[in-house]
Image 1: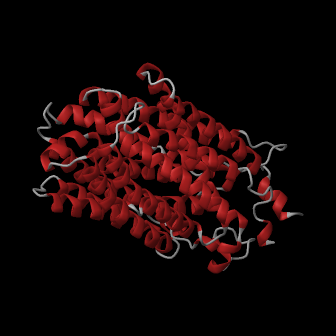
Image 2: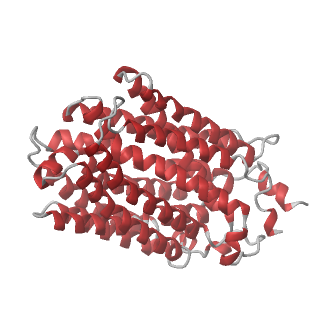
Length: 426
């Protein structure tokens, strides 16, 4: 029998053990905590800029401290996640980023804030390589897209909760903004206890398996051989473009809404809730669609191509900011873009999980590092442009257009994924 055919076809499989979905849910919660720590800065940017006397370029540089640290650490995290015990690596990383988030509530100088953001980035960088590695070990291939969508939706759940917390804890002039960092940092300790309790015994053994032992019928691939694989370079294009698109929206959409579209900081929180809620729906729905599209007559690879172009199509209406700068029209377009970018993340994760046994987290780490290095270099440049230019469409509109176009490049690359993605292994 052709192993490649089995790899691409949909086969009847027994239901997954409930504990595996509990682990996916715990990873969703970890991602929620991750994004509350991360998004607190953007949601309170106006207040923090005022306290530390930052212009837009200075704010971009502050984001860069996080980004450069994240880029370096995610590279290390990718290699560590394919070698070390993930049951222990995950809570250790979460402890680091929770301490950094908590410490942010006590900073008094810009340098202290920058250091806290750098340590936060170093800890948070482990979340995705570890989570994707866990899914690669415990979830069968046909369900990995959905599992990725579920855990990754924690990004948007955390980003939704952040503005809610801002409205509940922070005064109109920014009073009490430090409380949010204190609360987010403290929540991490609760998650650590839940994770250790929920991954004991035989579960710990399965989570800790070496990735090359997950599919025993597929021989291991040497690390250096990754760079000769077409599938690896497709994953590189998808991963870099999707990460760049998301983090352009994450960092600069709030500034665009306040500076270009003239919403106040209170209105901004509601708009961010809407954007991230739409992105959350997109993460779950597009992950489910990728699973449902697989039939005896439609392969996994074909279903992923469809999801790729569907995701890109949801993002393209955001380019209307260049032609019809009406907030009532643009806000729904931005929400659609958030949903579409989440579909792109699903493709990135499943492609990384498919490239080669034993190197899933390395792929995520290397590609994530490249994307974060690029973004971190660009953020101060974007801020400088906004400080020195005032185009009629808005200071940040050009960045929104670029971010909306990038998922189309990801979809085109995904369309080149070979039908039998494991042909090089047989």
